[in-house]
Length: 147
Image (tube, rainbow, N blue to C red; front, side, top):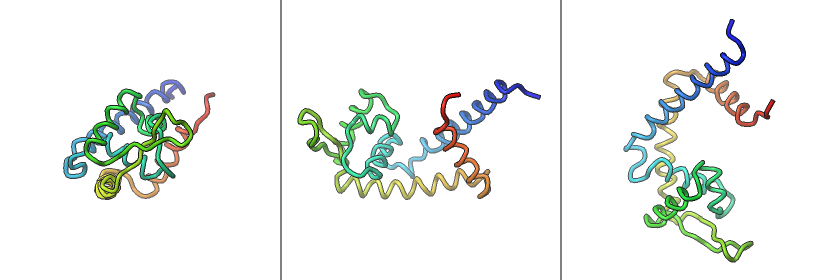
């Protein structure tokens, strides 16, 4: 019988490889992303689920990028006309980011294609009950407290 440490490491390795394999398939799917990179879509998605414009620091937390990386990404999305900066009502020195009408349209279009692609990849090896179990276990891991 494997020790708890060994089993935890085997589980981590399996989870990591599964995530990287599936993400690799997402990343190389030009028919889904069009002219966007997956991280650019991640910003649009985060903005689409937010109650209002977000600070760049809030986007960094959601999209898991560093501040400099996010700043470059924001500049690219601004250049494509998908997002715009607006004044931060609580800090005159700062700005927030929101989608333009074109950004909303693009996010919905790419999001629908991405959702279909995710479903296709996830159901190829998992049935409904396994998908529910994976979702619940993943949520539990993210919310797990340090022991």
